[in-house]
Every structure is written in C-alpha cells, then in structure tokens.
Image (cartoon, rainbow, N blue to C red; front, side, top):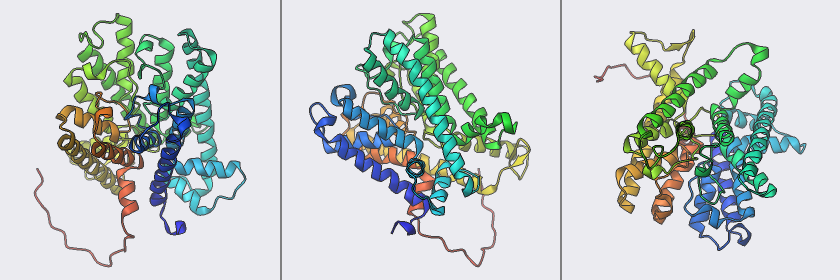
Length: 440
C-alpha cells in the first residue's frame, strides 16, 4: 500500500503517525503529574511535531521530565522532518534506502540536487544540526547555572530550549512559561536569536553557507531567503522598539538596555519561534497587527518553521516589480524565475489566507472570541509560532481541533497537502482558446 503513495502523501502520513504516537506517550502516567485528557494530549503532540509551541495546558505544572523528554524528541523529529529523520535512522543502522525514499527526502527538502546526492545532503544536515544545537546548549547551560539552577536542571533546560529554539518551537519547560526572567541576559538573548534565525533559514541555505568557502557563490534561493529574512527581522525589531518603547506594561518600565534586548528578541521570535520575554496580552494592537503579518510570512522552505515562506513573499514582490516595469518575465540577480514557481507561490498565498480566515471565523463563532485574539491564535498556529494572547487554554474542544488542523497544515504545507490529497492528474491532449478578463 505504501509503495503506491506519492512523496507528499508519505510526508503528510509520516507527520500524522508521529503525532498519534506522541499522543499515546503523553497519555502515559509517567508523562504528567496529574493526568491529561486525550484532546489535550493530542493538542500538545500536534503542537510539538508541527514545532509550534502552543499548549492547551499549563506546561510546567503538567508534564514531568519524562513528558518533557517526549515533547523534546517530537520537536526534533518535527523540526528535521519525518522523512529526513527516518532516512537518517535507516542509514545509521545500516538498512538499505531505496530510490523512492531518496525522492521522498528530496521532496521534503525542496532540493534541486539529483537523488544520488541526497545521502551527502542528509549527512551535512545532521552535522549542521548537531553542531549548532551542541554550541547552543553549551552557552545556555552557563547562563542557567548563573540564574541558580542545579547542574542537572540547567543541562536539561539547556538541551530542551536549544532544540526548541533551533526547531523554531515555542515550548518552554521553565516554571514561568516564558523567558521574562532572562529578558536582560545577553547570552540567553543572543543564543536564542541565533538558533531561531539559523533554524528558520532552511537546510538548503545552511548547506549552501556551509560550502561557501569552496563554492564562492550563493544560489538564487539563498540570496532571496537571506535578503528577505534580514528585511523582515529589521521590520520586526524596529516595530517593537518604536511601538512598545513607552508601553509601561511591556518595554516602558525597563532600563534602556533591557528594552533593546526585548526589542531584538520580540522582533525575531514571531518568525515562527514563539518564545517571549514580555506579556503579549499587554502589547498594543498596532504591534500585534505587525506581529500577525510576520507570523503569517514565516520562515524559509525546508526549514524548521512554517508560514507561507519568505520566498513566497519575495516572489510576489518580484512579480509586482516586473509588472511595474512592464516586463513579462520575472527575474532576480540575472536569473529568470519559472512561471510554475510563481503559480505555486500564488496558490500557497491564497490557500493559506483562506485557511486562516475560515479558521479564525470558526473559533470566533464557537468560542465568542474577538477578532484580534482569534486571528492571532490561528496565525500563530498556521505559522507554527506558538505565541498566544493567553486564550489557548480556554479554547473549547471544537476550537482546539480547529487549531490542531491549522498547525498540521502549517507544518506540512498547504500546497503539499493539496497535492497529497488530489488524485493523479492525467495530461490533457488539448488546450482551450485564450481569452482575457479584466483585472483591477
């Protein structure tokens, strides 16, 4: 049966299987202090595998060390990607990996390399991931020890938050449920920001940067991702600083140095990470509006994050630029963009926007939420961010199911799921005559 499944269907099925497995593990008595319902166990499992970070229960008071370990493994699996993870495991244990499995990994990574190069690509991804997470954990251990944690607690918290940050998941096992106590800590801020950005760039970009000294060139994909990401980070940091600087409930009551660290942190974290050093429910509506836009955009393709992807935004900007100049072809850095990619970007944008609108309306009707908390929650789920205006734990069962569906679609990818569910297309032996319609 599995041999007949296409690569997108295998990817979607792989995520679903791990979500179900995580649910069963989180229901074990050893995972929680006082038990957890099936709905909440499923919610946290979906959130972990989709590397979102939303939790329908108070995380610190609900999950034991074993439960947090389960969540940590689920985040790592979800961040690396099901097919990447399983193929790596097969290689490490000496099992044969067929040509079909390589194509599946290639589909998930969005790689343009030939299938024979996938093994080398997987090795590079594993090396980069282990190196980045090891360095991040080492620095965080030092900081957590300075804040009074025991060595064992500091080591576990460092490992948990390193994986969560690199995988762009907003889960935190700290008692306060956020990083407010570390708002003025340079090490914590810089490590989290670095891990979030690196995880959000995507593995193709990281591999390209890894080989830059030999190649001496960046691919068009890498250039667009790096430039667009830098612009979005700048917009995020500056907007938080300008709009929240005098807000006494967030940045306004802190020293100037702490305000700058908070602006940097909260300018980066909506790029699908979900950590916070401030109370988001106290932010001004103008700030939250911009944060919704950043969450909806998300990170790069084949990264540990979600959203409509920065390359989609970059392509739309290039399309508008080409139209403004009266050009029929869309190009960047001396390279022409294929029309099929532009069509895919438009399909991703329209499908994602429709999903967010429908899901927002659904939880507004079911739970009586106002527009801003509802769209913030749904966009956070779609972008696999994990930020919330303190409404996640108050959602009804129906609303939780809606948010779970949005998290799943946000991680798997709207276009990938559409392809996975669609029947095999048959090529047409004819074409229709062309006729223009009015636009604008």
